[in-house]
Each structure stands twice: as structure tokens, then as C-alpha cells.
Image 1 (cartoon, one colour):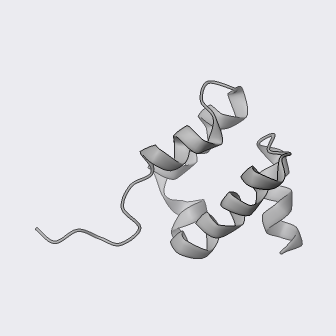
Image 2: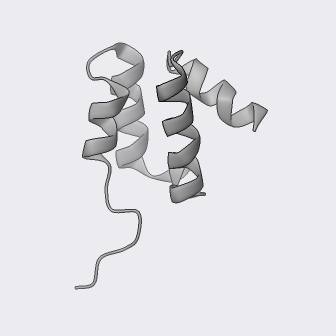
Length: 68
């Protein structure tokens, strides 16, 4: 949990709302959270202040693969 919160704070999240949502997203996406290029790019945009974390959540890829 400490590592997860450190990741949230590293991209500038401070509000309880954002911290809880960040933890939830890491639980939903599991190992993809740190390995998926699209997720990594979105978190970089949050860190730069280009978008809010709430907006990034809306832009996340599906948490489970879609069927062809």
C-alpha cells in the first residue's frame, strides 16, 4: 500500500478522492497499471498537469481485454 500511495504522490495526487481512486485503479488493473503504455502515458499527462486524474480515469483502456 505504501508503494501504491508513493506512486500516486509521485504524479502529484494529494486529495483523498484522487488517492482512493488511484488505489482502486491499481487494484482493478493490477500488473497492467505499471506496464501498459497507454496508462503510463495518461499518468504522465496527469503529472505534467495536462489533465486531471478524474479525466485520466475516463480515458483509461478497458480493464479487461475486449473480444474481437
